[in-house]
Each structure stands twice: as structure tokens, then as C-alpha cells.
Image 1 (cartoon, helix red, strand yellow):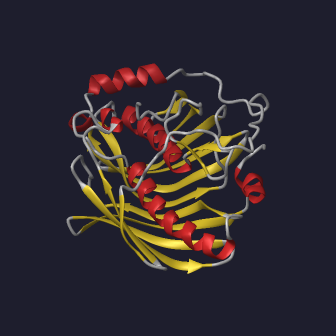
Image 2 (tube, one colour):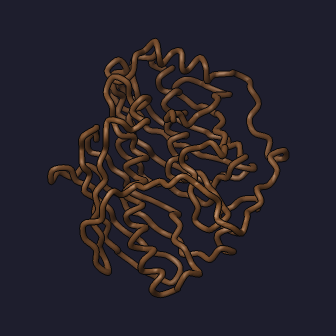
Length: 310
């Protein structure tokens, strides 16, 4: 499995903006189900497509001398999910660039509808040669960039039809162990090993855990507690779905051999929504944090709100 989330770059103005394509296939590694019969590509991992597209717009503007690494995201908002057969239009815009940093925004659209937005992502511009061989990066970009290639046509994508039965999917286990839990708080462990496939691309010269993998692990722990609470008050009718995250911060690189201790604390609970704050530490040092908001939905509500075109 390669950790490449952009399949084609169709438009590019270095340092300004880019547009490209991400295809969703049954071959994708990060498929999951919120309700039986409706497989979706992880909406958290999907955000990496916008991050990688923005990265190419910055890398080409600086002639393959820097590599953007996101350190802060002001807000992530998700109002729809992606299914096998979907072709996503990914857009990235650079608001500002300085010598050592950049500020960018990204969106993902499917069937002509914007369903995922990343606002005010702050990127540190790391020397490319320390992360990735420049010749390798140039070759990868040349393989991706097809100027003038058509973007997705929303009228020709068809419709994904959900099944009622469970669809067999690979099990993604984002938390390795839960070490403590109460009615309002949960603590878990995520270990990072050198054998993880994503280190082949992130990055060859300096293996670093992708930010979306960290976020997915943190959100999954909070979801575990939220699912437990929701089941106790609403039975099996409703499920928890991430709709928004704010104030995402990464304070240091996480590398192979690190053990991330994650704590999620419930801040507010309602019939239809809940919110949590989540933090991650390594050896007692705070390395990542975020706030998140869950939607509580039935299957019919989920299809109506998050499955565009179903």
C-alpha cells in the first residue's frame, strides 16, 4: 500500500492553486462502514488528498527545495462521505507563503458538491532533501501532472447503491489498547512500528507518521467512548459520525518506535451531537491535540446527510 492520495494533477499554478483527482476503489486500504452495506473511504484519511495537492503547489513554486509539513489546522468540516466508484475533485489554494511557512486551504468535491473542507492549514516548509530525494519527488510529480486533463464530470459518475448486508472489509484497528475508561473520559495507546507501509512515502529519508493517521487514531478513541454512551441511551438505532474538528495541532514529529498515549474527554453531550477534546502525549510530552464534534444519526439520517446522491 502506497500512501499517495492524489491520482492526477489536472491544473497547477505553482504557489497559488491546484486541482486534481482522487479515485475511490474497492482496492483502497482505508474503507470502513458506519452502517452495514455502506462502505466509505475514511473521511479523515481523505483530507490527506488536499494536503498532498497543496504540497505539490508549494514544492513546484520552490523548485523542489522544500516539503510542506502541516503543523496546525484551524478547522476540518465534513458533510459527506466517499464510496467505491466515486471520483473526487480535489482543490487546494495557497493563501500566503513566507520563507519557512505557508497558509493553505483545501476542498474535496463529489458529484459537484463540496463535502470536505480544510481551512487555515499552517505548513512548515522543511528542506525537501532531508525528507525525500529530490529526483524521486520530481519523477513522482511528472507521473501525476497531466495539464489540461479533464476533471470529474458530476453527470457521469452514477450512483452508489447501498446493500443491506455487511460488506466484508479489512479491519482497521486505530487503537492498540485501552488502558482506562470512565463515563466521561477514555485513555488508549497507539504504537507506531517501522513496518508500516506509509513510511515508504512519508518520508523515505526521515520516516514520519502522517498527520491524518494521528488524527484518525485520536478520533477513533473518542468515538469508542461516544459509541458506548450512545448505545446506552439510544440502543443500536443511532451511530456516531464525525462532522467537524477544530484547533488541530502537531507539536513534533512522531516516528517509528514512538508510543502515543491518547486521552479523550467528553465536553458536551446532546441527543443529536456531542463534543470531545483529545490530546496525545509521548513520554509525558504533549505532541498533538484537537477538538471534535460528532453527529448522532440513524441509518436513514446518515444516508440523507452524508451520502451525496444516494
